[in-house]
Length: 225
Image (cartoon, rainbow, N blue to C red; front, side, top):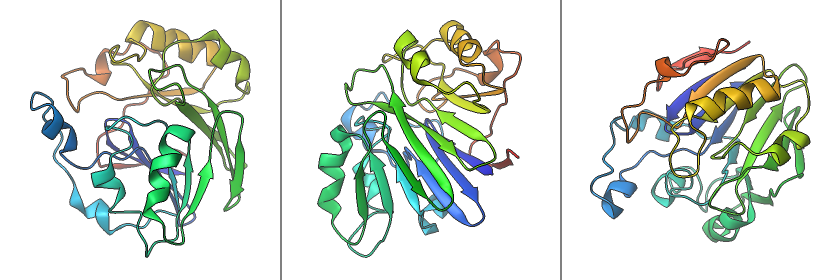
């Protein structure tokens, strides 16, 4: 499995030619709403040439579900499997086409391309927010989505998470670095990958005190296993 960090919470996984894109934010739409929130990471338009097989959205906030980005990958001509909680699902279905819009609320599972996608609870200001676990039969990757530390989430997780991708910025109802490190320990994940930083702030993943962390460089493909 390979992964590319697309900035903020955006991720692109690829295995055996299958592409899974999660929460891409590749526009300036947030700056249009609030000029103070200017991108620190330039938009890499080369990703618009890719066609994902699966797109996953964790919640309906503009830096995760961004219509200006979504329309580059989902339209009347595409055939994409889209996994989305109710807050996103009601909106993204308007794109029509041959896309398969799957309502992906917590505890839902969807199998495709030899993988199983499992939706889990996230504790965030969008009540419908989710995290997702990708199991390809070899390893399990847990993308928490935007979330606070919450014991109910821990009770729902399997005990064999290999990689966890989680926010550490400590604002907007996300875990700070201390709670994120506690969360990693409680989950028992083998590798922790901090995200949701650097786009609108100057927070560095280097400052995340977690002994088993892995740092991704934006737009650089990394081989996980």
